Image 1: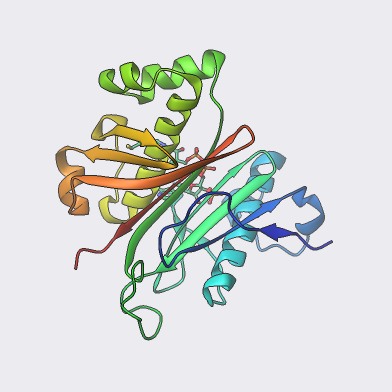
Image 2: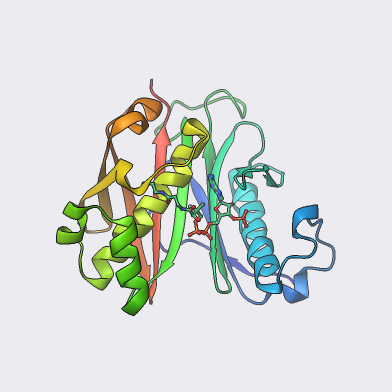
Length: 229
Ligand SMILES: CC(C)(COP(=O)(O)OP(=O)(O)OC[C@H]1O[C@@H](n2cnc3c(N)ncnc32)[C@H](O)[C@@H]1OP(=O)(O)O)[C@@H](O)C(=O)NCCC(=O)NCCS
């Protein structure tokens, strides 16, 4: 059985492409080259990993890159030379987004989004109940708790912060705490975050704008960090 891919339901940064795969990966896993640390992992973890890799390879194909995605010892994905990317998975759904880094993949057309320093994508189910309370307490700042207290707003704020982490990690190469970015605005499919402390210096900007969209009860959040020109 061949996996079926479709487009992401969220606006992507200029020049970036994405792919999503939905389904039961058990039928696709036989010929997969598993990293040794996942050989004995739980079935759900192996499914998530495989789904993420399938979405990533399809996104790369759509970018015109024939390649695969490795895994570094800190858990971050390793993209082919000249590519920035990110992937996410949740309960039988996985999504990936990729873009080109400057000078990496042949001639650039100087268009927007052709020099991506880092990408982040996150899928998050609508938060409610105990999970909502835990996320609000642990991952949102005091100001965010006041602004984004409801289920949908808190979900967007949380997923946006996870996407910041993924996009920024390749620059920062360290754990980035939830207090280092504050979601200032959420409206019409876009969110804005203010960065503080060392993170702003590491990335070279003190504010970023990402996108989000709901697909049923799943929230997709995406962020691209462009290289400073
Ligand atoms: C690492 C983290 C962001 C993953 O997010 P998640 O919602 O748990 O899981 P997702 O399915 O969305 O994403 C998992 C994928 O993220 C990727 N990932 C893991 N660590 C990563 C890192 N350091 N940098 C970039 N991507 C990373 C991997 O590809 C992973 O999938 P894989 O293990 O199958 O390859 C999250 O677990 C985490 O540690 N968050 C705390 C830090 C944070 O978000 N701070 C906010 C700063 S404002």
